[in-house]
Length: 150
Ligand code: FES
Image 1 (cartoon, protein in one colour):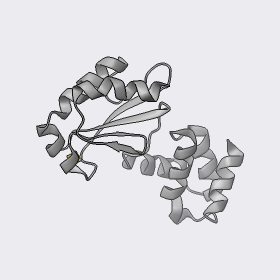
Image 2: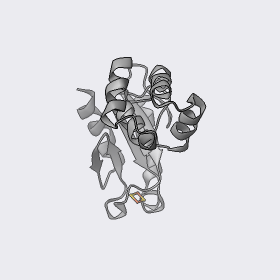
Image 3: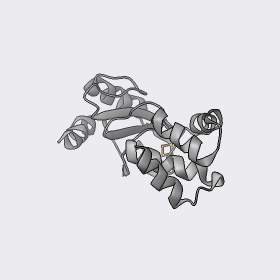
Image 4: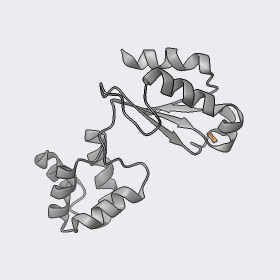
């Protein structure tokens, strides 16, 4: 893990001002920010670990907990909410056996909520990894999860 963090920091020429981008790259690799990687980044960038943690906790996109292989984000913004986003979330939570903010024990899925992903006209919207799925219905939730289970 240390070698990969070294490579990422080197990619940004060890520039402290690029901390957010460095954290993004670390997270892309591990799907979360492992403490060991943050300690290494702190050492290489000469930034106190506490400062790195304050950046990591400020941005909602960063996770300090391990995430599943697939990240399911159910939009609960106003436009999606009025079109039944809560029912979509409940259906996904029921099928996965977890609550929003949790990860399944097999590490396949993490379920999260977001407040608007910028395509309100498609609501209700669910984002799976990098794919935005619009006009979701409760009936579409289980088949969608099945596709990602394989
Ligand atoms: S409110 Fe869901 S995409 Fe905007």
